[in-house]
Length: 210
Image (cartoon, rainbow, N blue to C red; front, side, top):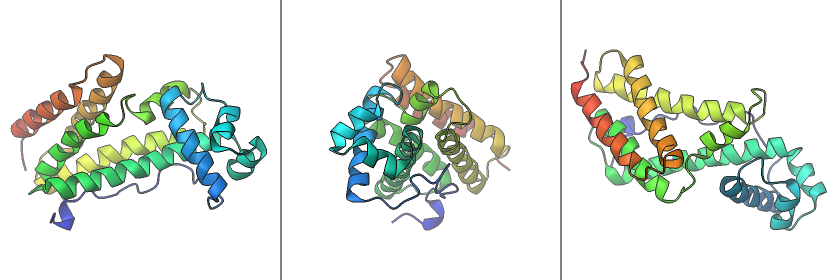
């Protein structure tokens, strides 16, 4: 078993707005499930509420009653994806059993390879951020919060490992992590997660400690 101290600390358990405000009914669950699949596969702007309602077998009125607007539904989709990501990382660490915080950092990179096998269109948060230009969109705090959580996790694990200049190290690790996601999607670089993993290992091996 992994020492609880070595598991990723959920510094941001929930990000952004709390959408939807109402508890999900069976119809609400169908709407969110249908929207999540369509948004990820086709893009948040390309998918209209008619297509989501049809896929969920509900009326548009029911969709708006449950989520208020398409924008709020996009935020709910990303919040759910964020929770799935956190659960996936917990599973990965439980399986890999890292022996210390430095290995936790590398396990977070190793997990990318398996995550991308089931997420062939790349990072849903990055994809959505490209489409949502308005900084006040309800989904933007979710997107920003997800990336801030990842950086905060690198900081926390780097501090536990005794590295010096942990903020600078976390910045570099985040650039490697996010760069792998973008390269995988945009440059069709399927081995990007593995390259980022090796680069992160080299970075940690050469980084000064306190």
